[in-house]
Image 1 (cartoon, one colour):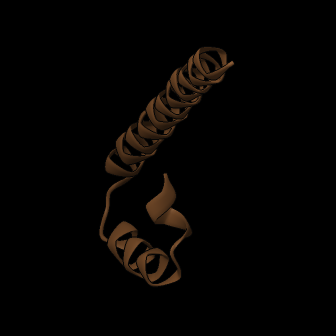
Image 2 (cartoon, rainbow, N blue to C red):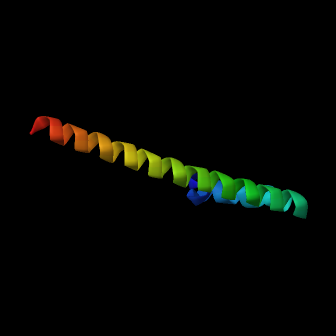
Length: 62
């Protein structure tokens, strides 16, 4: 998840995780993994659609 790379957020996240139970930490970890996977898929789809659009534009201008 992109937010986790932002330094002040990491400090906030770490202080928040201290208050979590082991079950909550596991659930949060699974959640962040799912969000990261979703973002990766969304970025791939965005790239594919942008590439196709760019190709169409180039072919229409020739």
